[in-house]
Image (tube, helix red, strand yellow):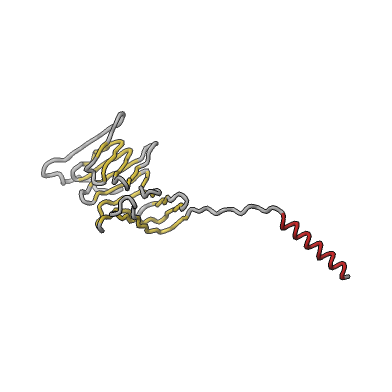
Length: 196
């Protein structure tokens, strides 16, 4: 009887050894992207050390591998310098790349000091880019409305400083439309506001 038990025991050990040496299914690597809800983000761009960006969104994704964040349906978006907001940004989707640049298909920017409202639109080839290192808006199609601009201004292929003091636009095959107000009544009725 002892001999039969030893034979069965040896058989079970041999079977377990064979099973242990069989190749198994490779372990799956989980997706490294993080999905976040109700986020508040402070961005301190390396290329613009004096600025701090503040964002709030109900949903966001972050990819540690690429260093890219995507914020959806911004409820707050603003750039501050020395604690003062100089402009705000609204977007349905805003991408923050690994160099801290902001990108999107449609951004609505309000220049706080001047009241200018910038509607920035992508085209088939290029996204809207807020370039931190250069302090520039790079915009395929820009509409500006504001106290000094009126409401019917648009340019294609815009490259402008954050304060719009340096501004270039156009090129072959582009269209520009401008409306300016002059005189004492420039802040009169019909002055546009920056809202969706």
